[in-house]
Amino acid sequence: MKAKDTLTFTKGKKYAELVAFDPNVAELVKRLLKAQAEISFKAGVREVVDYINHHLNPQVWNSDTNKPYYTIEKSKWQAKLKEWDIKQ
Image (cartoon, rainbow, N blue to C red):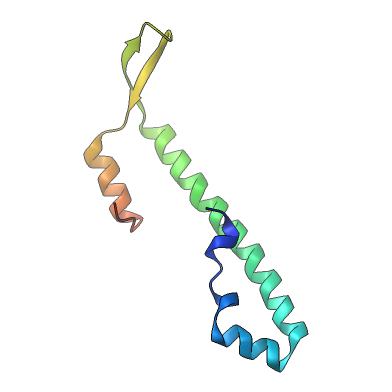
């Protein structure tokens, strides 16, 4: 998924009405919405990455890769998904 995938307004009836009314304004609105979608999308990704980095727990050493396995406590992860309103 990319930021542009979150833009639904530009596919709807109201946007089509705006294009018919004033194409220049519609294009400006579209550019502004794309910019805001990019900012919001990156902020959301950053929040998830920060959460994971903060809650990773090294559990077991993997002798094959010479690196630890990492886990996140399931109940905390499920609570965070619920907070973010993400359905599994």
